[in-house]
Length: 532
Image 1 (spheres, rainbow, N blue to C red):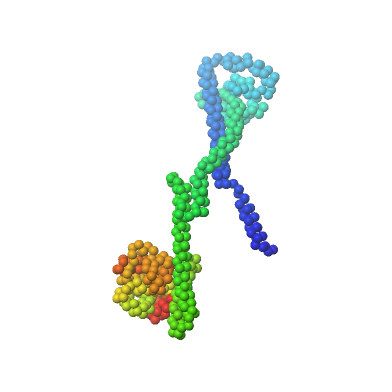
Image 2: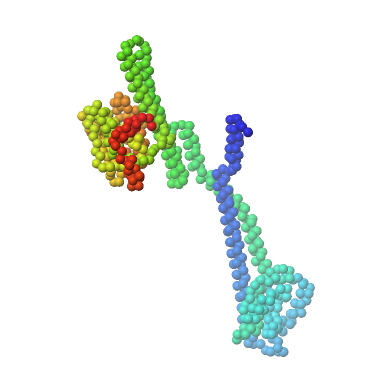
């Protein structure tokens, strides 16, 4: 199924709208939501740990109190044991129990489901498993066999048992030992109803207070998020103001050294970069229009003069020659503009092959010898050793030709231009030195800018476009090298290029290609002048 452009745009907007509303929460709400989720996890963790610790503490306290009660009873029995008087095999304590036994039995008969009292049951067993004393509530407990198994071996037993009504009781059984033999048993217990009630109250309070704390925490986190994002809001307002104004303005930078300050500094750096880029673009556009207008105006003027009146053939030949010259200059300017446009877009391609830089420089010097003779400038080369790099031969030839031609143009008759190649600190070096007019210190930082001329009248008279050094810098950077310039007015200039040397393996592979004759270098140098 085909869509018209309008239908396609509507479909795109709908899909974008769906994506936009897939997560409608703003960043403040998201921060509050995530903070609330963290609060939930922390509350669950805190509540669980608190409940477990509280329960363990209360159980420990109950066990300790039972142990103390059992020890008190045991101490009293041991003391009374010395004072017992045997009467039909029964002790006074047993006789005391007999007086209350009938009353206890009657109470159990009237209330068979009697709950365990809060004081806790107590039972004392004497020799031969004779029950000396037992509290009424002890009769409702269900005792496990493990008690007798442990106490018969002289080991204390502590655990939880249940009553008939299902109520839990904590029971402690302490054997009575005399001369290594067990002669009795003391059992004390306490109801766990108070413990369960306390723990239930804690759970109820946690469940009741948890949502309230969560609600307050979420609301507080939202307020804190709003407070924290206020500087971002100010930055957004300032950026919106700058977007409709000039790029020379800057957003305010907070004093606090945090992420917001780094964001503001980064935004200001971006604005400065954009401002400089647009300034260069405006200057480049204006300079390009001016440079293109000059040869076009010259061609138009010459053509109008030739058409305005009848002249001799020699006059027409002169006009056509000037038109051809201006057309060549216009073509050269357009070629350089295309080279830089491709460089900006990253579309320029470079060869990667072994290149003898010393032979390349010799060929370039031989090519420019004719221009040097015309300007009465002495051109020489110093190539002390073989210098091989990996790169694009045609582009490197263009670099040398541009630098040599630039030196010849700005050197007065009788001056010297020297080209030098060598190896320094495991780097290939190419230097072009002249004794020309030099460059003023205020112009040095701008010599590689596009359409920048230190002497505009002289540059245009020599036929330069103002783009040669910009192209040279771009080619050198693409080869992983560096270029700098040193100059003083009326003392000449020195352009120095540093390039990586070819590795040993690359040198061996390109050994045959590196030994080309100078005639081939001159041919390549001429080809470098053609459009790239």
